[in-house]
Image (cartoon, rainbow, N blue to C red; front, side, top):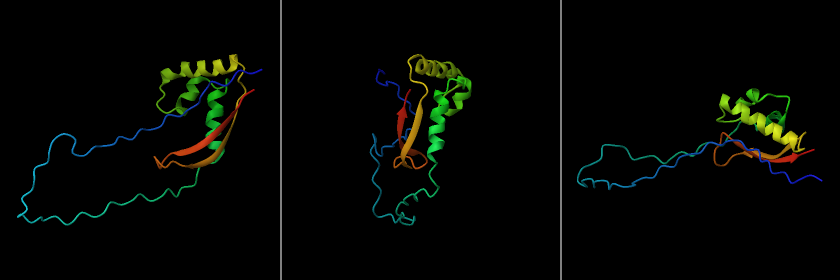
Amino acid sequence: MHRPLLVALSAATAVAAVGLAACSSPHPKSDSSTASSLPPASSSQVAAPVTAPLPPPEALTDVLARLTDPNVPGASKVNLVEGATPESAATLDKFTNALRDNGYLPMTFNANDIAWSDKNPSNVKTTIAVHTA
């Protein structure tokens, strides 16, 4: 009988910073008798929707398969993880060894419901089904 899978695979995501207007200091009032020489501000433009095709499911699942493949050394996996450094290679090897030692390998992945992210238009979101040994 297999223990419940406690391993979560995640990709690092970029965090967008939100600026707050008028945080601490009041803005001086302008003199209403002075005419502005600037043209009126135009309305903000909404970004056009992404028109590039979505990546195929294999583009996502192949990355996960390489991360869990014990035949791929950690040093070759570093470029698959956002923010990883060469020092991360040993941790990636430990991750794969833990999967193997606890009977989770081989792992297979299925990507479903692939769509462009509504929070960061250059990212995709998907549901990943993980199947273990």
